[in-house]
Amino acid sequence: MPAYSPSMTERVARAIAAAMGSDDWRPYVEAARAAVVAMREPTPDMLEAALPDMPDWGYLPDDWRAMIDHVAGERVFPASRGS
Image 1 (cartoon, rainbow, N blue to C red):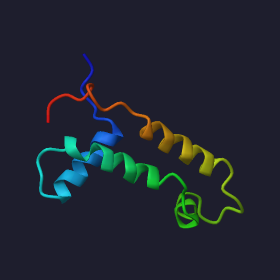
Image 2 (cartoon, one colour):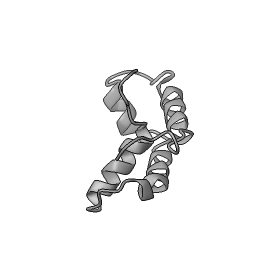
Image 3 (tube, rainbow, N blue to C red):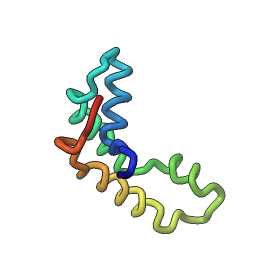
Image 4 (cartoon, rainbow, N blue to C red):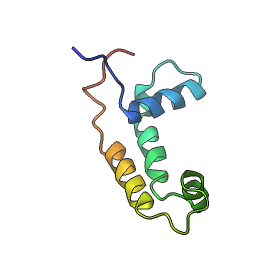
């Protein structure tokens, strides 16, 4: 059986919970999803960091949005295991 790998949404929820001083990440899943969706449009600084000195960023903005859309659509419950 493959090792459990938490979804990105769960990872963000756990980070928010830790920042709030909580051990229970589950109440923060919707806040995590909102935080991820807020990052859907990459800033020029983000794109420049990924591809410095390039005349354009090619498909990178589209690739970034596809990754964010994937995370925004992740099912967290009931697939999550343990705390």
